[in-house]
Image 1 (cartoon, rainbow, N blue to C red):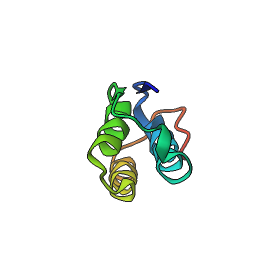
Image 2: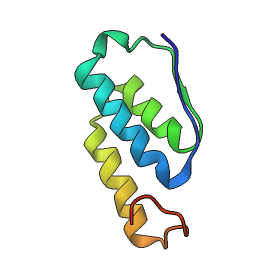
Image 3: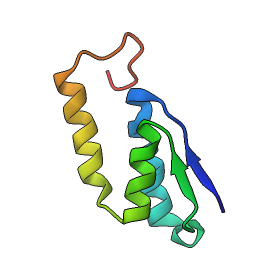
Image 4: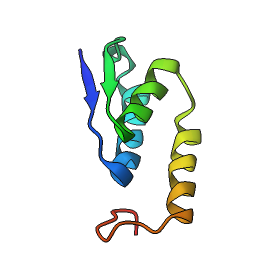
Length: 76
């Protein structure tokens, strides 16, 4: 299966959630053909490198806490 995460700015936190779900509930689907752009590349790299996704989600949220979110931020 090929998996591609799109670039999406602060919506990237949703990509992290999808990556966690894949690792937890469907690890057999995670082949080594994963890609992404911008924020989606972070989630793709975490899956490929088997990084703890909690670290990435904390980093994304800490950036959000230090930068003013766009007017349509899904986190607020």
